[in-house]
Length: 312
Ligand SMILES: [Fe+2]
Image (cartoon, rainbow, N blue to C red; front, side, top):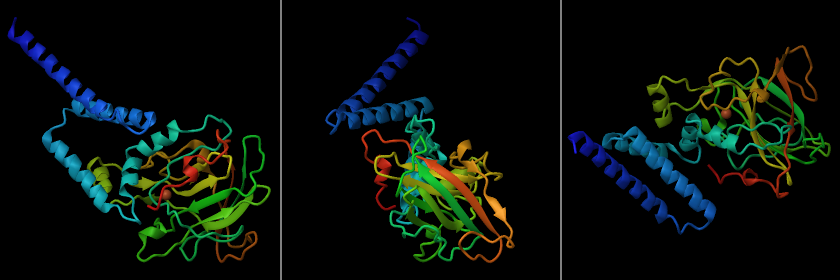
């Protein structure tokens, strides 16, 4: 037996014992509370071990990873969700959206949830404004909520949030201000109208560990201009999506990989001389129209996102 063969056989033995370790860890979760939980944990362990093996992760790299995650946790608070941001810039959020996408071809596409949702938002009436003093060009939004055959979804709930003209969400400003976010309900014919703020492209928060990671890879922190929506109604799959502003220069390089062509729509700019519908506005304004199409939910109840995550 040559030295080379011995090394080879040693290497194989070592691999076998690494595999045995992975199997032992998988088996340790055999008592998980449901078959689904067991399957998810098994997959997590196998892929995590596979990652460590494939990258031949060093002790220093393991320590740097632990330090990174620790700082990500310390950066997260009730107004800032650095873990969602991390998931977003790794494409993990968008991949989760994609593997859960409805197969109904007529339904509106989903995209990432993002880190700036708040579970408690003010309710507004149809035609009212969300801005609450947040600066920016007024944006008139109108559309319908319907099913795949065009059937109106009466009373559908729309949760809306967006950044101001500085590219910041209310939660990123000092103080407890709630602005340019809220919820409203479509009328009996599924129609809705409201006022928001013309979205601008913005940088995701870059002063934490996620920003550090982007800089080290020379990646842009910019997201193309968009407005966030969660559209829900009993009996229909909850839709988490954005409308993106057509023509934005960052559509091809979204830091969160969230752009879907079907969600890129014209936001029409109107001069001050053109009177807007149902409200006096000083200066120029914009408008966008979009019809959201929900897919029926399999069990007739709202899907998991109907119960939105507990307060961030
Ligand atoms: Fe956003």
